[in-house]
Length: 626
Image (tube, rainbow, N blue to C red):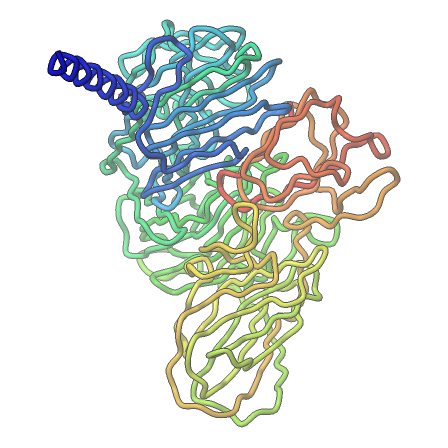
């Protein structure tokens, strides 16, 4: 009898252990959702577990973002086992997009243009609720926005008006356009491979994008407007992007913040490289030699190299020909057969805005339709030879004992009162208060060690732009340096690969070799002072809020600005404003960066205007007024 009771007890204990073990396994099931459309997938281990508005995690070339960017967004939490496998629990209500949790293939540093692609596809496998208002969508930045919808529930639709129904890449799409193109599949699907290249090529053929546009990122995720006020789950099971380049007339090189586009021209003995960018991403320029166009490009917002080979000779001009609201061109330099010629050293510039009109000298900027003249190229056949004389310079010498190493710092301030120090191995070997002209500051030293250019008196309206330094004749571009504690990136001070110091901080330029001892300082400054009005703005008091100045343009809906830069605009009416990846966006002095806001929630107008102050540091910084 005792033995029977013991056996029964053992059986009961075994059943209890089995049930507990079963429950424990269920809690760590890595396979995704259990039964029910709103049950959350239970993931084994999280690399990101957060309810923060901008929570993100990056690994390699992929990032995952929580991204609660819309006005009045409700709570949303993300649980990710990797950058491409995650889910969110989201509770939203009302109208207007609230969130866009997504996986992103980051491509900004790879400098891939649309025209350089030989293939580009992306695959997304998702699951989501069968109710609410949301879409499953790709968001491609090239660098203008292109949206691709494969799943649509409830009261949502692509922005803009219907254009046509067309087959692209083996899929039938309804195409919409207003501000940016949108593509909508005719039947919902959770799992799809999209031919990104075919869609981008279609946009280029329509004139909506440029083949020279640089692809910044390809994102996939959920645009969530409403979950009917209930917590619902959206799952990314897997996400990938695959592309290759080659063929055609465009080649791509990968370097720090540098992209290269080569346009075929039948060959030639002379090579001309134009390093330039647009502020909007739709600017068009021509490169002419002796009046003949030998290359033309639509620019991206990234500083990029455009190269042509030619046998033509004569005057070289870089000309801007489609000026419009928000469009300006910055030309860093050209290289003629390896010889660099800085734009700010050229006295012929019919497109810069100076002294209240178009036309001036010694500037990188083309604000109006016009040209910068870069002198003459020789070789091949031609009839004209004209040389443009570079800017004259003045020299000031500070006493010192001399040195074997020469360091030149080419820089300017936006205000004219910025102060910088040049340090070698932690010791200051030169310091200057800058002008608004791009100028050369030179020091001779026997010191060795790390070289830093440091900004130390940041304040309202003050920023420093460092073009490059030269160490014993060797040029080092600021935008090629990975150490920068003063640039404003990702919402804080400190980043990489930028000419700018927006905060007190330093750009590191590597090492200099040589003895040790005393220093002497020489300041070389351009004889002509140039202030670029469109590049910076300064907030000033204005009844009931703050204005910005100088005003670059009066804008009206629909209006979009992408890319890095600082602008001041006025607007009198809109339905809403929206922005992302900005360091600042103030409207009459109130901060509205990286959010959606309706006009009813904007501050009171000043003198009948909203004064909009835009500051972006990236090619994918974005603002829109609708």
